[in-house]
Image (cartoon, rainbow, N blue to C red; front, top):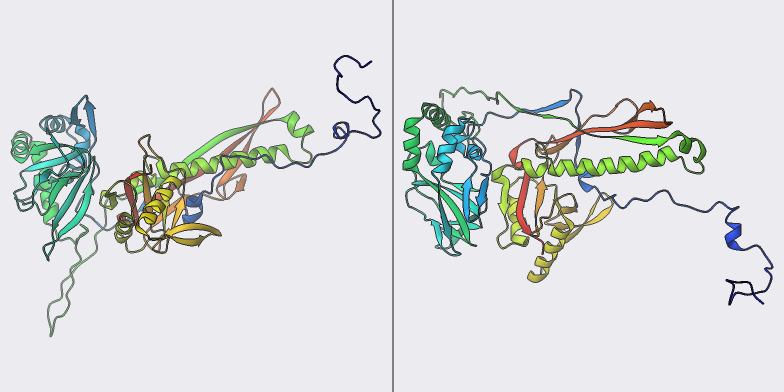
Length: 464
């Protein structure tokens, strides 16, 4: 008769020690603690890093008269769209103007218009009599080519603006035609309304006068202060005198910080350090998470993140939604040299699908020992730190890197006290009353774009 609970079990006596009992006396083979969050972190490896000893990195540039332009921001209530007054400072003529009451009055005077695909928003060779803000949708800016063909100039999307130069300059005519590609919502401000507000605001008149004066100064096509030269002359001619002027208030990048406090109980460190050191393993995984956050900040931080610091002139929009070879070519041709793209893996897959549809094949390149997709000989590095919106939209970055090439550089500080990796310190904070040992784990970093064309972004990339 068998004992209760042993039905079906063998009644024969065991002839040797079972494996379940033997494991109680044996040391198992084991791995180090594993972590799914670890990614390739190509961007951290690809950026050239500059040592910053003073806590800040100043980017000195040649004096630029033409102010950079950003994107205007909108707020919507139902079907009504309004421009955020403070964002009107992104228009070149209003850059640096801080009278909120005047900006608020200008924002209230914008008129909303809706355009269907194929309708013209502005027409070439007609007077520029209004400022146009694109609040929603896509529009194509094109001009007539020399041989009767239409020449595409750029794609316009939410936040872009047209005609802002007319606020501080002479009478102008549109040099292109803007046509709605999708349903578009546009806000316009007639120049007559602007002049009405200008006549009532002395502060605005003084600001526009300064902008107009700067626009008349000798400058090159990039808006930099001109350098007078003579060439092709014969005989004894009087040569022009010149000098190179610099920006009076160059941008400074302060090092950002990523920190955490690692806690390890002293009992764990004392009793369970064989065969692996518990403190070392805890520190290793913490540093991996710190590096992941560092790369995320380099891409997404509002102050120095690369997605938010690309110049408006280096931002383009996809023609049809998915990233096509045409879009990637346009992104490449806007700078004198490109070292690599950075894109979300879903965007790389979407680009490969577009190549397959056209019967072309992306390159396969070696980058730091890894095989990656490339285009025109430029590697496309995958990074899951570039966000993908709920609507399936993302961005693709391309950059030139290094101080020698006036490119993008990473900033960090090494030789820190208690440094465990270059630029990462783990400083002992002591043991508390519960026997828990604390370590302050710290890294300092940032990124700088030395000249505007060092970084370009392809926006509104559909990955679906």
